[in-house]
Image (cartoon, rainbow, N blue to C red; front, top):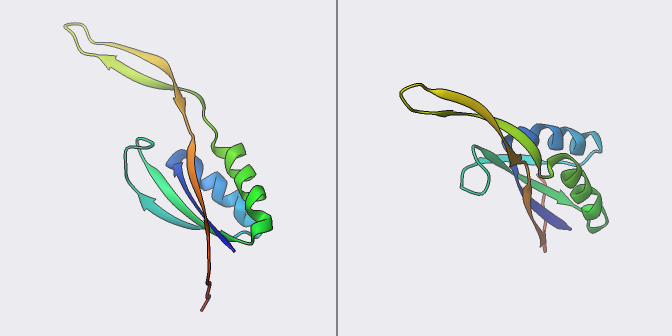
Length: 105
């Protein structure tokens, strides 16, 4: 048995969870904070048999990969200016841990 601990941007977490649960893969979401991904992120705890690790990692990679996005910005001056700039959004960080013992009550 393996435990996949994945930190995902909040904008991507719902679609990742929906995809995993549609494949009958249980997932627990823990809200978390940190500087890895801003403005918000969540930690997913996913317990699976070893043969499903690649499947789970592929779902996460497909739905939470880094990609280009746009954010609004303002420049404070005597005449405030506003605009949009392209930035990289998304991304994830995953740890796959071996589990020696598992109980479900």
